Amino acid sequence: MTLNLCVLTPNRIVWDSEVKEIILSTNSGQIGVLPNHAPIATAVDIGILRIRLKDQWLTMALMGGFARIGNNEITVLVNDAERGSDIDPQEAQETLEIAEANLRKAEGKRQIIEANLALRRARTRVEAVNAIS
Amino acid sequence: MAMAALRREGRRIAAPLINPHPINPLRSSLASSDREHTLLGVRSISTQVVRNRMKSVRNIQKITKAMKMVAASKLRAIQTKAENSRGLWQPFTALLGDTPSVDVKKNVIVTISSDKGLCGGINSTSVKISRGLHKLNAGPEKECKYVILGEKAKAQLVRDSKKDIELAFTELQKNPLNYTQVAVLADDILKNVEYDALRIVFNKFQSVVAFVPTTSTVLSPEVVEREAEAGGKLGELDSYEIEGGETKSEVLQNLTEFQFSCVMFNAMLENACSEQGARMSAMDSSSRNAGDMLDRLTLTYNRTRQASITTELIEIISGASALEG
Image 1 (cartoon, one colour):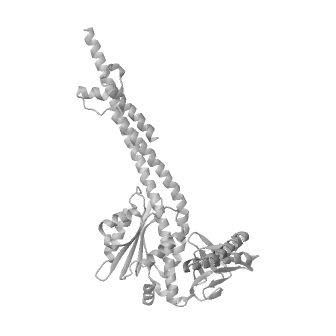
Image 2 (cartoon, helix red, strand yellow):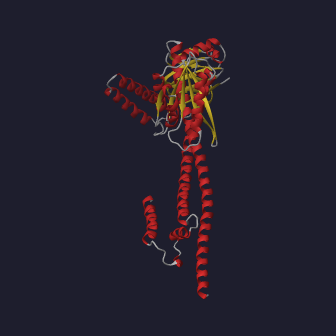
Image 3 (cartoon, rainbow over the protein chains, first blue to last red):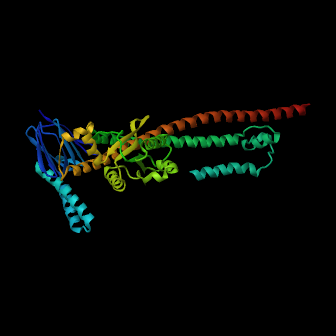
């Protein structure tokens, strides 16, 4: 009994195959999904998606969206997604530093909110890279 | 290049003007043949005129052939993007359903069209369908507004439905389409327009020669809840436990906004593909027409040329035989 996971972004299909278990981070915390989970539809926060294939855990950085779980089928629709293995650690670290600098410089409510979002995205990417290694 | 052609053209026209009287019939200058013919009172198209026409038709053929190739390369670029974005709205339809027959008070029709012309009939079909939907959905208590994307639909709809147009966006294709731009656009529309149901009208790209006008319906969160209680496709929504927000309505609202921007993104990409495909086939038939026209003009030209040579020969021979006596 395996789960079928589909991760879709507007630009491409990032993942479409069977997995054993996933850990998804939502607005209200992290949820683990095993086969035969109850059907739920939830909003996905900017965070990490962990996927378990047999005994290996893979990470993916998700940039917010929705997920629907039902009948052993998981569909995750996000604005953007990157596999942990595809992210360059050096570049992710640099992006994080730039985002932090921008947040310090930001003025005005709107800029602060945008800088916060950019910071969270950069932090997620760095965590995704670090979590594998 | 155009200036050089114009200069050459000027020289050819200027030459006969410098020599008003054809001195030597043996000169057989084609430029003066039309003057001879008109002096004789014979009605025929001069070779000069035919040659000018052939030149312009040949230019048109080259231009349309080039336009076809440009459209083909643009099509290839957008086609992969459009196919990748198709997978995104299908889960939404599976969850929330696409019910064009839903009966609501405030309808908004989002018409997607192109900015540039010469792309066949796709813009007219989109406008025709939008008008049809408007007729279907306008009634005593219901109202129906337009949101227009693209210059061509705006030009057509402004003529008779000016008061129903809520928003119009043009010049969307200056930069290649990407999701962030469309998300911002969708946000704009959702903020400024009150709606119960949004109907997006666009041309779906099935193949390079087939474009099907389609409409996708996105419902507002309140209508979704109402329909969910009523049962049917949306009734399945209730079987899902909704998490990830304070209340169910907040999640539903975010969900419908996300759905709208995804569906818009796919619709705009498909319409762009259809536009390039339609332009390819329009330009192709135009080059073929130009080729046919060129063939016919060549035949006319040869006939005229031979007629003038024959006339000159007749004059010479009759003159010579008159001299002999």
